[in-house]
Image (cartoon, rainbow, N blue to C red):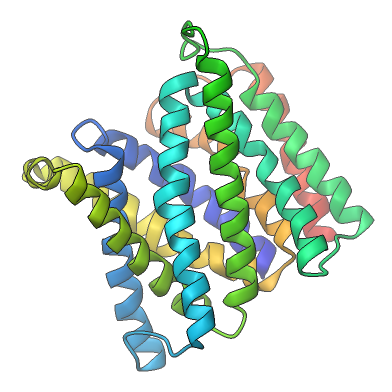
Length: 293
């Protein structure tokens, strides 16, 4: 259940990223992140009311504080560092820095949560990450020239974002085990929306957000991306983290660059190179090993 939830989540993130990229023409990263977190929290809260009879989950105060911290670290700080890395060194290089997340998560889960991976799982994770890295390491037109110092700063920002993601994975795994995946989503997205709302206030971005949302096409793109990538996607991500080893879940959740290949080919008519097909095949073989382990 956990492995399949991570795979489906990664596919939905790939589809959702196309819609969010289209909406990004009018929205800043913080504004878009705020909208998707706020809308996702409301949708999850309504679903929690239907399925469990409450709008907000009951939880231990300590767990609530840790999950709130994971929301701030992962959704506010982590995403901000990632977008800063993106602007410094480009999408391909920024995504490559994220490929360290599964390895860091597995090592930290083994040390802090006493959750080792089996030999087959480690082989599957290595094969999967090799395929993802092979796809991402191809040079493309987005690799523009770098200013002096940009590479070092961009890589540091990317590693910082990766550390934030690792922390979020571990906190969700440890503090959310007494709650449903839906309840964890309500807490994390709700707190994340509050933190991002404060950031938006500091940036004086509310008027620009209202202007962007006045366009019907932007509202449609955000609604589609939020429904698939945030509401269903984050729900499945929490299921994956709570029901399988953190290292396995992090590996499968990192395969979004593989699933974006057929999604982009279908939705945006982007050609897929032979190198990308080979990398995708290797990653799928690794995924099969993880699911069979």
